[in-house]
Length: 382
Ligand code: ATP
Ligand code: MG
Ligand code: MG
Image 1 (cartoon, rainbow, N blue to C red):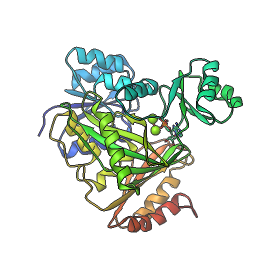
Image 2 (image 1 turned 60 degrees about the horizontal axis):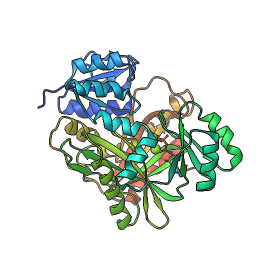
Image 3 (image 1 turned 180 degrees about the vertical axis):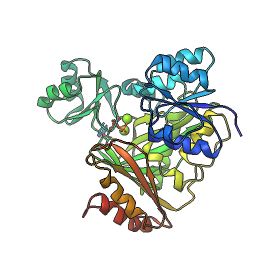
Image 4 (image 1 turned 30 degrees about the horizontal axis):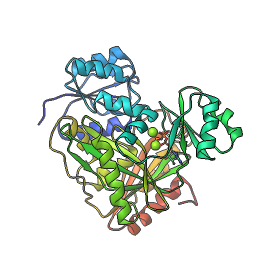
């Protein structure tokens, strides 16, 4: 089918689902990650994987020497080594430049503004005085954010009053910071966009994402919003991704404001949690289209093949896996439900352990089907 071997920096659940898609196409994948039993390594037995971090220059070079194309399942990788490898003729998708721009949220926002993409006002805040200046400029509350290494809201602090400035800076002391004006959103939307190296882009339907404690909880597809807003969100997402060189799937997170306008929140240069639903609900999953894109194969259709779907994340709540199995056992009894467990050994509060996607003939049917599963996650709440 395609004799090129793929190397992935990172072996978590996104890598695991890339491997699932790759295996159907009989593609071989080598994983670089520290744990020997990383989720992606567990299900690819045709290769000897590499143990080490996705920041380790030598390990990345070792991976490059064994494969034809490098890609990532996480953006917090050593992009300088990827640039060096590109210089030497290795294929890296998305390009190292794209990963470098996106991995610093401040640089990412500057890039987006320079390409006419709407984002919340933001400013660099290297000192405490600059953070106070952000409060005067943007008003309170505003968001103080880590420029790098952020995920699941861990690099963010909501600054509600001037007295929060010191604790906010103390809490986010590990990386340089910038400030963002508060986006008074009515909903959060996301669009997965796949891009071929020749610039062709295709976008998936617009989804609504519902977060709990800054971690994605539900992904509803199609988003239950006005058609004009859907079209606008898709356009913003496609325009943004057209501006980044290289191939692959990108997750684009957006805010909808009360007047229906869209602000782009952030981009992930890889398959994304808000695109898990594409495995069961779309004609080609984000994972398969990522493989097709980085290998320069024709892209598959991004259309839905069912009328409606909702995905719910299974998060660890304690160190016991039993609590994660409860909604999965419930899902075994639900028509249209597909269970994904990632094979992670350590269960911790807030850790993404798996997800369940429910599809159906209508959004109402999907909501009904989901009820017992949500109830098993959190009794009495849905
Ligand atoms: P992810 O896990 O998606 O990578 P992250 O740690 O990079 O998350 P963000 O996406 O920047 O964090 O923010 C997390 C959440 O915080 C957003 O989904 C949104 O709910 C809220 N948020 C972020 N920026 C703003 C803003 N400027 N105004 C209001 N809410 C915001
Ligand atoms: Mg992020
Ligand atoms: Mg985010």
